[in-house]
Length: 148
Image (tube, rainbow, N blue to C red; front, side, top):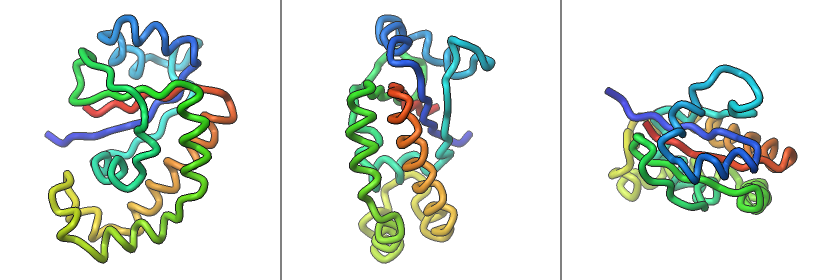
């Protein structure tokens, strides 16, 4: 069984309901398209740990317990706006270069070796996170980062 992570954008008012009842998070992220489902999502698959380490701005929110997953962090619309601004300043190629150039420093991350060997794929995932946050900030969405 592999561990995967994804970001989910949602209406900032919908976030309040998830915080009140965290057990509803899995159903929310798996709901079909509609007014109560995520407005956008971006999977980072098994690179969740690497993304969390290289782009800490993307997970600079509050921990949400009792979701049934391995981890869940939520970011309010204000958090998302700040994260998007900081992420826009990050140079993905420099981050990937650091990650692949210092493998021992990142060896304890989940599947680090696979992402060091697939650096171009990792760069694409990191760029995708930046685009996801830019879109969520433009919509004034909140974000849930869920690891299952």
